[in-house]
Picture: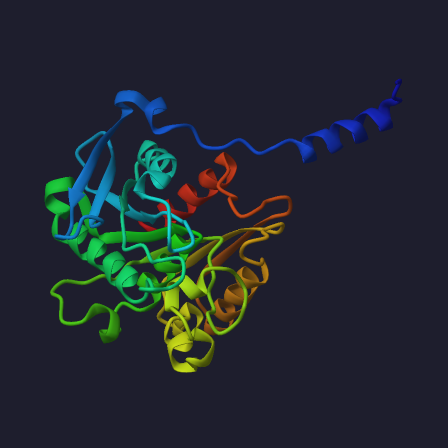
Length: 284
């Protein structure tokens, strides 16, 4: 088939739009440019272990704590290996913690143990900042899917006693990256609420509100980067827009990054480049 010049440009444009976005490389690709330490215990439970991805150099480095997705019932910390290694290659230390995984039928549910695990990981990492060359004042929370939910809860509830209890140390962070997360458990914006909150959650309005990150947004909330695919069939993109609107209303610094052809895993190399640059600005 022959194309004239305008037709050729149009065809090339359509091909580029349809081409799949490049994914970040495997952690092994970086070789000795980063340091990886695995299975560091931050508690006494089998799932309370984390992997570290550290830049080369003296530090202290900013730190991003990265939680994997899996509908609150599956996945593991290796699901953040590509993200953690990429960030380390950009000078941002990364930690990928495990957390309590729920029974798919919500017996027992993930809440609130998984959120407490997430906060415990941040407290542990802050307490070890000297040993691992972090800057304890420059910690961000990042997550994908159910991990994004945990990152939002960590970032938006730094002093909520129901989740922090009387544990020593702070779980506060100075920035959050929400990748395809659900921000409102009062609505049906995504899957996983049964596993998170357990049977009968539909009738437990107070619990659903307590477990909704969006209700904790306020003027003192940390900056939030929202990455979401517009074709996401697992967590509707309206969740991202709802959170963005709430942050705007509260006067919170935020960035909404929507991928028109992206699905539930919008973690492309280009998107990670954007996230890394944003984190560097926030974690100066």
